[in-house]
Image (cartoon, rainbow, N blue to C red; front, top):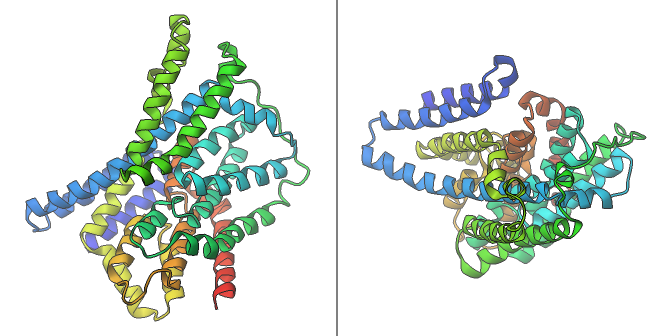
Length: 422
């Protein structure tokens, strides 16, 4: 267990120092994930038991990866049809601070209806229509991550952890929405208010036309593709609630429908145009290393969960701090280092419904803390990892420029929660 923790920390350090050591973070994450499972294989545990644990975790990880792949393909396909160009033209503000507020608040509410991961992918595609400098793109992406995680925390379908707590009956949808909405909103508004001074008076530079326009996609096709794509994304949580199938099945169904429609729309065009607007060409544009990075990180965290490291952390917190708000606050900070899913799973296993019944403040505050706490590090949430992969955001840059804002927002939200619930 000690050796696993040492290599886990070393791996995270290499990911953080990617630009210094000039080793791709995806390679480090994948190596780390496999290495920690090798440690488990040679730890003296029966091989069949290790394989059984690996199969269970890999099933969960695969669901997330296929969900991510489907969402990224749909968003990229909307983009090549210039669907997001319509939103670009509808937003009239020329000031960066105005744009930051509009996109952040849009992300906040959209992530509650979709989920924080899908919303992040969509909003980053929109941001790229307005900005093209690395500094601006990374800053806006940082706020999209904060907004997406904050928006997902107050919705029963907005984040994988809220889905877990909702499905497990630890929280009801009414209690979650009414109790966590305001703290989550404050978690976003405080960082926005702080950074507003930075962009005061700064105008947005036109980044030019979309390539899809040059490929002669009609406005009718662009509008139709945007409406269809967004509708299919909105139907993902509906599909899950009605069929009780995993979310990745809903996303793959939406992708299949989208694929069929685009094939029919372009079937009478030239071969080169059909190829440009096809899913086959779109999939090649997806950043595969970011998916492999996600795979490596989740494998590493799964190994930590399997060997009991996360349970030990939870027990130490429980023994050291006899206060549910302090424990949840620290779990939120911890969720920026390790994935929030095993943390919530561990909490659900450690604390029974007899001790903390449905809608107890422990469960509701846990939903807020682990949902928003991951924003403090770029690799602390699915939304952050997706943004990091798409825009190649540097870990240390995020740590210097966004982490402290996310921390202030996180603490402010906890403060509002305590005021409202004491």
